[in-house]
View 1 (cartoon, rainbow, N blue to C red):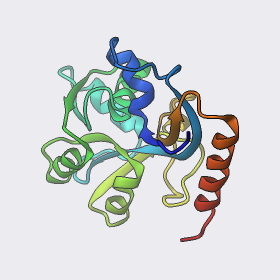
View 2 (cartoon, one colour):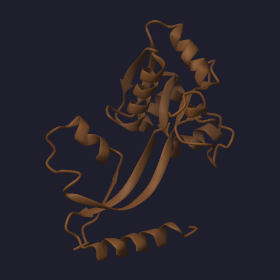
View 3 (spheres, rainbow, N blue to C red):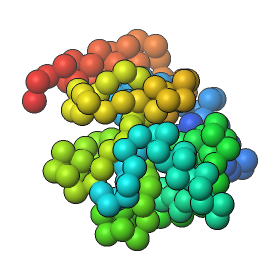
Length: 194
């Protein structure tokens, strides 16, 4: 009836590949209403790491046969998948250090416990702007409005792109009319300056 609404994130599209026996079918049990946000990750490093480009990181990793320890916000997250894509695209060795969320991983980047992380852009942009951590590149296209000087990873590795997203879904069977009304109402809200 459109009164039960799911607000979910990237895990919605990743989980079917990680867990073959989910209690629901992502394609049959839900229908999309709205893509609420699309957020690139930012490749961040501890501010004392002597790298400033993706090429620098690749060269550093190639010089370390044991590999670079690389944090993520957890197994199967976009941050983990981004580091795996980097590893596969470059042939470098990376040692995955999964955390229970992006916050603890960022804390350890700041403290120097781990040196490298693909971080959610929304979570890390303030830390980058404050100089607490160093940003190397982002996983989107072009330039970011909040960090216009920051290149995309794709500038070095063409086609490299990864985003976190948030979206709104309703159960399958909700009428197209209600889905359209919800979509229009939510888009109107997203257009509000505040």
